[in-house]
Every structure is written in C-alpha cells, then in structure tokens.
Image 1 (cartoon, rainbow, N blue to C red):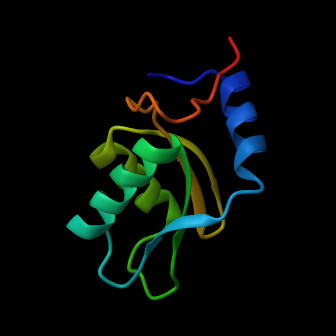
Image 2 (cartoon, rainbow, N blue to C red):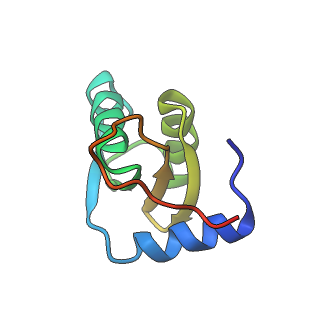
Length: 100
C-alpha cells in the first residue's frame, strides 16, 4: 500500500500526541523488536518508535528496516523517532479511516 501525501499528513497529525511504543536499543532490530512492532501495529495500526543513542543505526535506517520486516508503511522520521502504519486485520479495534 502506498500512502498519498494527504494520507501521510493525516497520519502525522494523529501521531503527534502518541507515546512511543517500540524502542530500538544497542541490539538493533531483533526478533523481539519485530514481534513487538507487529503486535503494536495489529492492535493500533499507527505506532511511534524510537531509536536510542546506543543503537548502531539511524532512525531512517531503523524505520526502513522495520517497515520492511513488518510490512508496514513509513509515515515520518524526525530525529530519533519514526512513525509506521499498517492496516490491522482485527475487527474489534477502531480502524483509522484514511482520507482519499
């Protein structure tokens, strides 16, 4: 799924008030981080992640890798944080309605 500019702007606005749910440390993107990212995306659709200073990769590198491994869409990278989006398959969550 490719997000439009309008959809990215909408998701960035939603992410502003969100807390970080995935933290990437010195071990980089481990299986545990991938599992945490997948679980959070399935439960929330939109997640904010943070790369610690001790990590050996930049936020852009971490965003691109985690997006590929979780089959999600990168929304935004700012400093040490980034935002990912993936539509959830769970029926019981409130889904994010993207603008056209």
